[in-house]
Image (cartoon, rainbow, N blue to C red; front, side, top):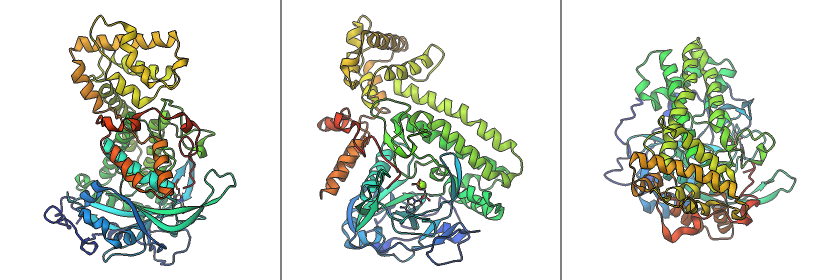
Length: 546
Ligand code: AMP
Ligand code: MG
């Protein structure tokens, strides 16, 4: 039944979907898993069910602000579909299509290290599953589409600024090659939403918006945790078996309890892969609670995330986390491991012994280190980090990045242009790196000599390997992005959209489409963060209020 290689229902390769009523749904999640018997859309604890059926709340004046051509293509949607006047109504939550089965997931989670009980999709409503061009199921999910039984004390809505950020970052991450949920569309609702952006008593009305997200599954660690926490092992097993059959079909033939151990082992690896990619590109998720951890190892729930401008492993964009900075850049690999331990605890009742889960969990650190080592080697343009001082080169590069306020993305691109020939004056050799300094006047002779010491060792190593400068630059520029979704760039797009020029969102997305290319005509998008953005709300500080 859940054969991932099933024939594409949308048969899109032959014929793109040219009208909304041609979209076919195949809702595996709601067909296979227990539903909440209570049909009322009222906030409550939901027992023994994986989801509640709930319809999006119609919005006053849906208007499509942006869409992703690549996600259209993934789903086999014809580009023309975006200009169908009904498109915004459907993906803003006002109109349902035949075959949709809208529902909200029940899940729990550990928030900031503490068990928080039932959370659930408080403002996300999955519309249903389609089959993409490669034959894989994809769930279409609206975020900000109105209250659900899981909305607790909140309104179920999302504001334009956070929706622009989610839309853009999902797609920017995909173009960078980082595992992520995708974004299909961004619709302004025409309604207003009350938010206290910095939680300082200054609530204001802001324009509302809805993003349609797309992923093979939106199941999170917290979907398992909720049933384990309640001792509901039957539903826990039903969910685990469904996820394995649907999303890990290569494990489907394994018997219990092996299948659960192998499943967990794969989640460990996918999570490590994802976080390693975040470290490569300088992404800080900001809210790595277990309800924001995808079982597929996809980056999910773009809230107060941020990108490192200057390289500071202690930085977090999330002001809600300012006191402890649990989710700062440098701790992400460790937090992922902590979250995996919570998932292991949740799966334990299915297995009844800790050994296999523990072994998989113990595998996290060596697996991550191996990934990290390969990733750092690639950033440096080396084939691998092996014995001859290569690890010291990797830590050396990160050490140089921390000497003075240095832009991470610019540094790696400039390092690619450092010449390695013998006999170059050391001051000249490090000259390209100067472009990455935020405060050039603070760079001392001591900094320069520490930088030189690293760069001379690096150049010598490259010479010994016989790697040409051209080949190295090309390889490095393929893994060190020139363009990342700097916080202030997203904020400028939000400002434009709020001021009536939503085209700015599509324009920025267009830059982020080719993050590794030089795009010389777009140099300003790759420049150091301007000084005004250093402290501006939305650029350096973000809260969970969205
Ligand atoms: P987050 O940390 O933003 O991923 O959200 C944690 C929980 O709060 C999830 O259960 C969300 O669905 C819920 N939530 C966040 N914002 C809202 C909102 N505006 N309305 C309803 N639920 C929300
Ligand atoms: Mg969340």
